[in-house]
Length: 361
Image 1: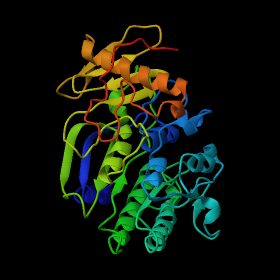
Image 2: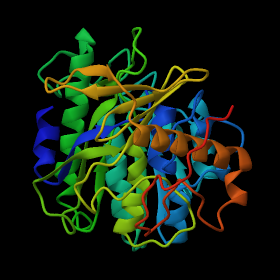
Image 3: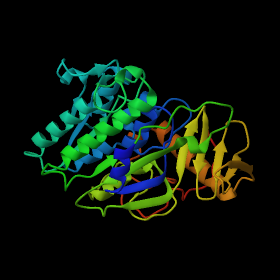
């Protein structure tokens, strides 16, 4: 991924960033809602998802033109309706692209998607002062198809590593084009994965399997070449964006501002109905009907069973219990004031200043 590595030098790279799960819906739950995972399917796939805190809704309230550009089909996972209901004023899908573009069963190729994004940014920044645009690429999926002649590998091989190379090429091409536009210097680019690879095997939760690359590029607002080594999570992205644009919001996202300090945060994950919380002290796993299990990382990177740290157990239980209670109560009834165990916009309060409670159903 040499183009991505080049982009790292143009922004701030997050060396210990963790996804919350292994599916796109779980990634959207973190990136668009700033919400920790709970056992089962992602909350944005359940009835009542519109009550979750919403980054696009907060950005719309702050005066941004909100737009989601997706090269896939609108009915996939009910994405188009979902994005509209959480605050994206405009949603473009495969139906909004010309029929002669290269496409797979997943949607148009990444380069086609990125060309449309450049077009939309060119058009919208002529009339709108503030644009919030989100996108989701689809080329890095089986059957790993991409246009011929873009990279050194033949498209006919249909290999995962070749599809990754194409996705890397398309991303670099997009950023090269964006750099020629008037809106480039004032635009904050957050390049984040939606999830980690699939996880298999008998381990409880393999923590390092959730580690993902991420970079923030903001030519007019961030010094290039930075690297943050503290533990970070995809649920931190909404608060980071809201703080960057100084948006006052009642949307009670979890997480912290990734650009405020290079400190260890926390990273919640879910796998096979188990919940885990990674901190600078170790990794705590919660399971229904069983005592917490803890792991610490050795100098060679291996995770080994250890005695559970009391502070980490309290932090893990408090976070997931608070998220569970808020979801069960309905977010729309709870936006007037902050609840224990969550952080609010422009608050310096830690994310886990809450009473220790037990996991509910």
